[in-house]
Picture: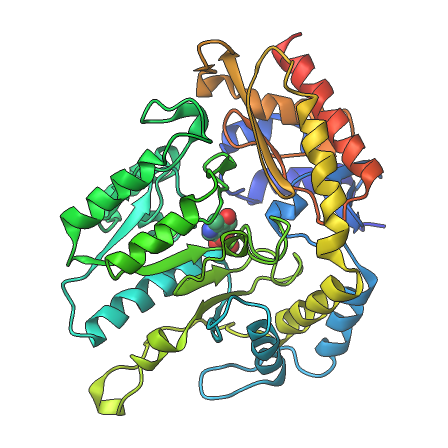
Length: 453
Ligand SMILES: *Cc1c(COP(=O)(O)O)cnc(C)c1O
């Protein structure tokens, strides 16, 4: 039992905590849920109410909350070593984790640079790619190709390679310039295509034109593989990712894939790029790596990139970058146990019926009058609500339609967090069939209640 009353906690929260991505003036006006415990796919508040965690603790949770085996791995490690450092020292758990991950990452991606979160993993990727180009004698290759609607984190480098105006536009004066390519968003295709199966991927043609135009000044291309998460769960048409890989090869650019959201099973394979047999040059992972327990990330690369950094100390080829908690043993121990659970639970196989079930449940939203587009990639999905279904006219963002649906969902025992007008489904990967029914039913009732039938 908590030592404080819910009222006391809410009061201190209102007075002292600044919540991320939150208009705090609204926050203080509403009665907020205070979470005390987690149990499987459920979050339990200080008053004992249970909520199905529909967004897996901000897209991180894999094996459920407070999973016994993970708790035990963490407790065992804490009695051995809580933290040392990777600056000038090695540590057992970080070594074993890298060796173990190297067995499951796409071929050739076997060198791990640890950091703490998705944003830092992307900062590292961007700096690594640029410094790589300088080592090859190309300091002029300082630009990155990025995509509209992309999200790679909130630190300035990560913001620079992002493309969501509502989050990023304010910081434009602080950002470095990039070459922004149109991203596939088939429901609202910039090229006017209406059928994503026969569109001929005009977005790839546009990308190639940009590569031609800026050839010689580009260090690399940054992409969320298969699905742009924070942009609204926007799923790419088949063949797009592999097409991007071919273009990166043709124009000799490093391909950087951001698997922060997609990595560790979310799409139904361990990594999203494996769906199209794509091997990037640099890959960033974070959210699911330690199953939602602790902040840890890795920027993973191949020996081609890595070797370019080798030389005499005086050559200044060292990668001068590092974070204090890099390779934290507690996080590494949990990440290792999580990989074991993937195997012992046959999680990737066990997920497949859940993925099909989600497809069917999503189908049940199609006839709702304000459901515009439904997008799914594995156990990630988005339901885009529109003001007018025929014209696809969006709800004005000020109406906060997504927020209102999620607020309503709480009455049905579901916690979710929208992306604009898109309702998000992103549960822990171990969600059961009954729990998935419960989640989708709660969301459906909420969509109906808020948008009218
Ligand atoms: C969440 C996310 C990030 C940022 O990760 P943080 O841990 O929040 O810094 C980067 N890229 C993608 C694709 C993400 O979903």
